[in-house]
Image (cartoon, rainbow, N blue to C red; front, top):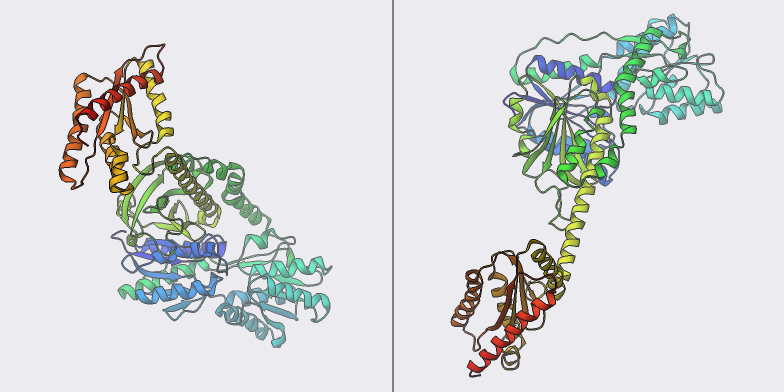
Amino acid sequence: MKKRKTIAVIAANTFNEYVNEILKGISEQCSRLNYDTVVFHMSYNRNSDSLVQVGEENIFTLINSDVICGAVFLCGDFVGQGILSSIEQRLSQMKIPVVAIDGSTALGETMIAEDTELFELMTDHFIDKHGCREIMCLTGLESSPQSHTRAEGYRKSLIKHGIPVRDDLIIFGDFWINSAHELAEEFISGLRKIPEAVVCANDSMAVELCNTLISAGIRVPEDVMISGYDGSKKAEDNAPSITTIFPQNYKLGASAVCRIHNLLSGETPELIKFPPFHFMFGQSCRCGENFPERVGRHQYYVENIQKYENYYDSSGMMETLLGAENFEDLLRRLESFTYIINGLEKFILCLNENWDNVEEKEDVFISSGYSEKMAVRMIHQNDHYVSCEIKYASHDILPDSLDEITAHPAAYFLLPVHFKERCFGYAVFRFKTIEAAVCSIYAKWCGSLAVALEFLRVRTKLIRMNQRISLSSIRDTLTGVFNRKGFKRYSENFFRKAKAEHRKLLIIVADLDMLKHINDNYGHIEGDNAIIVCGKVLSTCCKNNEICARIGGDEYAVVGCSDYTTRIIDGYLKYINDYFERYNATSGKKYKVGASIGYYCGIPDENVSFADCFSIADRNMYENKFERKKCRTV
């Protein structure tokens, strides 16, 4: 891809603030150390064996050690265990430095957020500010390191304040809504006593716990106070808003890059500066809200996410793309929707060779990996685009031509372009700022493109099938030349053209000699051979876009419109006679193949019909046939 070394980021998706903060740290630290960043991720992160998920997960097959020198593996965000195992197996074969974030892997080192102290501070807040003594901790999966580090912060706070640590008040959940909902139901039913406060290990659980309790008539914060962790917009927008904390995920990403650099070079690089953590106090703990900060965050959300979601929803993008007449038209239409993607600096569409597969069987297509050769078919940059076909090896991930564009370290986001398990290629996005990647619109945009490509592929295939069917209805199956139906269709066109343009109409009529004799004495297979030979000579004798047709069992016609001369017509007739002579001299057949020929060539008068012209050629053919019979000995 490039001479500059590249670090891969392997993520389920980037469409949340938690991952985006990690990516900002990775990108800035990579830029400081002169690494490019390539983010391999999906549009959908599901725990299923669906064909859609197969198509999504295919993007990770691009990762290879010839291009990638190290990898940051955000393994804690993947839902499916199968894809985690597949990625781990691939990375183990590459033997490059791997740093896993928020999950464990046998491939290399694991880094988790330094959140014990932060969780301790959140628990301190309930004790020191609100005087709580009975506090419950709802943390994540028992197998997750983050679950234990956050629970450890909770324990430290209690011990520091002389409050006994009770194991029954530490609940291991799932970092998702299910465990929060179950805990709320236990409070509602009376199976568990409602504590004074619940500190949750992330915002998703805090929001679900809060809303389920409120729906059952339990008041927050009057009856129980709740806090979250992550500083997400979900917590901010909830009613009541959730007290939460913004962790130092930025530092986590930067630290992972520094460790990879250390493993590659032996150097210990300086860590970039990063913003400190801070609380966002909400209504769920009676502290109210920091309104200036909330207004600022809301304004940021409106300007950078909601506005572009509205653009997409009202754009009619899908309907417009589906109306494309051909591939070039599709690219032009696609370009008109690049405004939908927030902060887009560059978009590159990379497709497999023969991505549309219109000439192959329907079940022959790429579903695992990519074609050996890829083609860049579109580059959008600086508000304009180029339709192109730059070939490169898929092993290189990105074409060498990007060297000319990117003089400084860059971050590229790769998304699969597929329809179910059918792989078309992948899309490459580069943003003006990493923050722009938090908006999922570019994934939806990419999904609309994939559907449009499949629609175009199927339509093109159907058109070609219909063309073949149409051609087969006007073609003679034995000789391949046109049949009587085809002759009628095209002969009328030539006739109208000759009259309109005042040009000569040519009609050659041929009748295969002695077909019955050949059939009776040598069999119908040899008779068919004679028919084929005659069709071949007549279809190849003309050089001015004429058409040849078999209009009867042993009858043929050639028709055309051009500026014919006597010399041209004589050349056609000589070609026919010479062809038959050469064939008969070399075929080794016991019979000879020949044909009686007649023709008409002239500019048709206004009062003349095509049938009149054809009759002249036919009459001349019968005269030639009579003369040939007189000369034959058989």
